[in-house]
Length: 417
Ligand SMILES: [Zn+2]
Image 1 (cartoon, protein in one colour):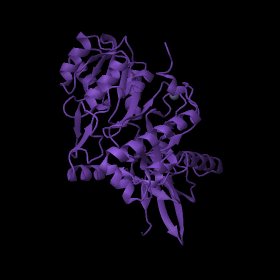
Image 2 (cartoon, protein in one colour; image 1 turned 135 degrees about the vertical axis):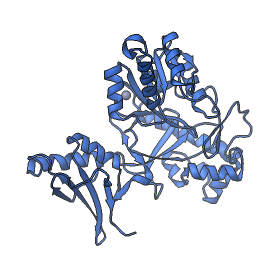
Image 3 (tube, helix red, strand yellow; image 1 turned 90 degrees about the horizontal axis):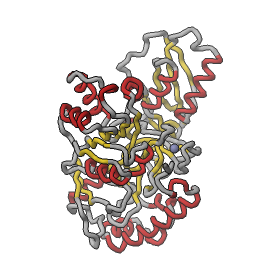
């Protein structure tokens, strides 16, 4: 069996960039001609469409958030004038807002890369527990599963009891849906007197739309023998990234340009720094450039052992509203939780203040074990903190055990703006 979905996944970074830049320039040129909204956006920002030649040029354009897209679509239903009127659209989806999206072409490999990387293929019978009703999820995951040759059971949002019945009767091998729904299905199977691991053949799960928390993942994998994979996307732009067998970051899809930007300026942050995920999907149907997801992540540029050469997203660190900026770098509560997990659930709190024009980052930790506070421990803590958050700690303060309440905020911003 091939290790990769196609040869695009092994392109050199240079080749990928050249080809993506070409597609982007073509998309902007076509969009300027076909979409009066894109023409207006470019004209208003005094941008000649021919000047958008590379992904770096995208910075000239504003980021469009979901809220902004909903406003634009309300002014001009259904697609805000961002569509290509020359193309016959085969399906129209909606998502809360409401926001309407034309379905991308059937030729688009939506989600197929993700399923392939998760090892889903022709031998699988996959239960697709995403809704088929109005929203994009059900049908787009369905076509991705078909693209890798799997047989699909379109169970959608049927009750957990019906899902258990289908898994049993149809000898389902793979699950596609949210992690919380799979948990509910496993619980229901237990209530119905089944042993999920022994009685069923379900050994793979591909999750999207919800975070997969580490203990949830551990339980699926260790207690129920289910190999789990995460997929990331948005209705507005389709699939964005997916996990491979290394489970160390999510590979960015080939038809997608992902920028990690400072949400206040819309400019790209340095590689490895935290920022908002902004997506441009290369296509000729819907000219939505720089869609701001509101999700925070950072880019991993190291080579992945799986053989795919694309850069990866380091999961989702939270929503932009939750993050606090220190010396130009964002820290999100989820990063602090990661540090806590690395130090035996160490209670801690970050505090950002300003002295003169300088930001000061103080981190308070509880002295829950005797070695905390010693030089060796302090050095290790500061190093790991910097690795995870990319920001240096200015002051480390030790508190007695029990000083930080579980309900206290993880980050306090004391600066006046
Ligand atoms: Zn990989």
